[in-house]
Every structure is written in C-alpha cells, then in structure tokens.
Length: 221
Image (cartoon, rainbow, N blue to C red; front, side, top):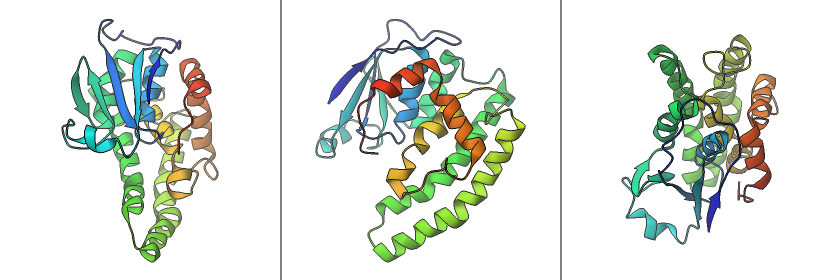
C-alpha cells in the first residue's frame, strides 16, 4: 500500500530542499524503516510511505542498488541503507553533530547498536529450530547485557541521550528500530533497562514523532 504522510512536527536545523520528492519503500514493519519515518516526522516533512508485501518484493528488488530494503527515492534516484539515509537527513533536521568529533560519537553509537542487532538478523534467517533457540538465548543472556550495560552508562552520563548530551539521529535510530525487537525475537529492551526506557519515552514525546505514532499504519512488528 502507498501512503502519503504529512507530518506537522517542528523543524530543527536546516530545511530539506522544498521541491524534493521523497519516497520510502519497505515492508509493513517498523524495523529499519521506522527510524527514517521518525526523522521525516520530526521535521514535519512530507514523504511517500510505500509499504509493500513480501509477494510484491521481487518486482522491486531488481530496481534497488543492492537488492535490499529499506530504500529511499529522492527525486527518482534510489538510495539504500538505513544508516546512510539517516546520516544524510540528519544535518537538515538539526540532528547531526556540530563538528566531526560529534558526528564520530553519533556514528559510534549507531555502529554499536548495529553490532547488537546483528544476531537478530541471523536469528530471523535460521531454519534449524534448535540452533535458532540457542542463538536467541545467547542474544538475551549474553549479547543484550553486554551492550545494554554500556548504553545505560552512556545514557546516564549524557543526560539521557546517547551522544553529545543532546538528541541526535542515533537516538531516533535505536528507538525506532528496537520497537520491533519484541516481534522479531521476543525481547523488549525497555523492560530491564530504565535509562533506555526513558530514552524511548523521550523520543516518543517529540511532537512530530508523537503525532506519527498516533496515525501510523498498524505494522506486523
């Protein structure tokens, strides 16, 4: 289904070029697409939220640079990878660092979260149910505590944010994606990590994002 979303959240930083047309294509899930939807919502920027079914995916796959999603079309040109897309939009949204060092800190957080969720991707693709459950147990009992203890320390030190003591695209990235983890692997990071839960609530309370959450389509997970 194709949805055209117009958000009314506040604008931060530089404006995106007014005449550009944006079309985000992804499955009807939150996952790696939701952080991009969040940043558009944050800016109050109109975009096409193109949600496709698994049956429709083959016809789109050939048109993508690397045969994967989500991908963003900007004035008809296709760009793939959620993190580079977020990094591109962030300066225009006022969610990037003010210098190279701040950008490096944001990238570090995004990369660390990517390491955390790499096992989730493996889990989803595994067919052996016994091995799959072993990986899930490793994720919950070893991987999550290792990374989340670090994130909790960072959040406490940075005044409730993951980088530079202020809201950045990394916060939108981790909160937007982690909302899918209960459906993806049966685990909610908000349950055992209070500073992470506070970050989630803080991001959800941002005006544009709050409005988006109220009206977004119901996703599979």
